Image 1 (cartoon, rainbow, N blue to C red):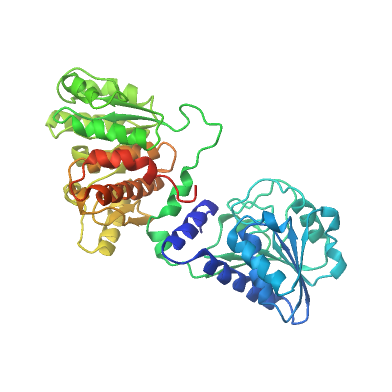
Image 2 (cartoon, rainbow, N blue to C red; image 1 turned 180 degrees about the vertical axis):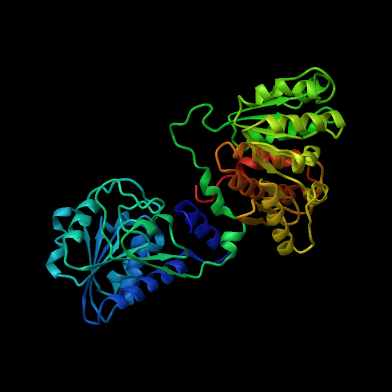
Length: 480
């Protein structure tokens, strides 16, 4: 099963792996044509009702593989309003070859019954469109449903939410659906035969992080302060730079507000790193059990807590971390020395743990030089922990015991101290707006992408702060 949002990401990632979208459209259209040939005898009348997106483009391709049939193609809307270049090219191919293809700009001109089709191919809207059908799609759906014809839907029947199977209004009542790559959750709720067509998307498009993962980060135009989360960084004491790096990364990764809870002994130094930091210091020179009530109250006012950067490994500090996690029930990113406590803690919190391989071994996990074996080991350990793991390495592994992703961005220059703190802060910000597993995968991709941009400019003498400055660009989708 794959959701519509994830399918869009995988499609974009496939393109990044040098599988062009135009090639995928050709494969999709061929799959639609095969399904049509299974449903109609040669010489039968087929009417294609197509929208202006890639769903329509798939059907334009299909029409070229159906020369043994009496095929007519109706485009709902003006050709110049076709939304993608590849769909437009396939429409132009039909017109240049003088197929029976015409544009319909007024629902009154549909008249689908005129040709008395044996088969109708519904390619008006695909998996990325939700909500009630508008005109002329609504009128077309009603006409399709009134025909005495077999109906084949491309990817999902128009008007149906691919993730839920529900419809907000009129929908196409399809007899058959040909969907691509993997079944969509909502299709199982339909009274229709569903065929899943392999269109050549490589396994790596799902396994490896890529630019498609960034599509989840769009912001509505009418956004307000706080919509994108508040992060609390609990760190510092023995070290001052680590919590400051994590907090600044969280800001650059899109969190609306970030506060740092650190000992008063280092508060001035932490504040000195940036005027953008908001501090909530507690008395003393290290985190200790007597501070937990105060920090827990503060953490419960935030969406995500980043716990660990610069805390150190004093026994009082680890006791405080244990007590905090046992009583905390929100989302947290756990990094550095705080990771040692996680395997033995019974917590109601949702954790993303970000160990490097040495820290993973200290937690009781196993690792391996081969990334494939390492991914299997991380998945098994994540299942035992019951939390998300982001294991840092040349290839980062993200696992939750069910799903596993691998990130290949980044470079040897990122062995410099502080890049892990940047990753923890980035993960914290993204966990405000994305599910924890997805937040970890996107954070790993963006952190490595920022490091790649930094090393391209500065060579291997990069600093962790170089990543922070490049995070906004690293989190920006190339499709924006």
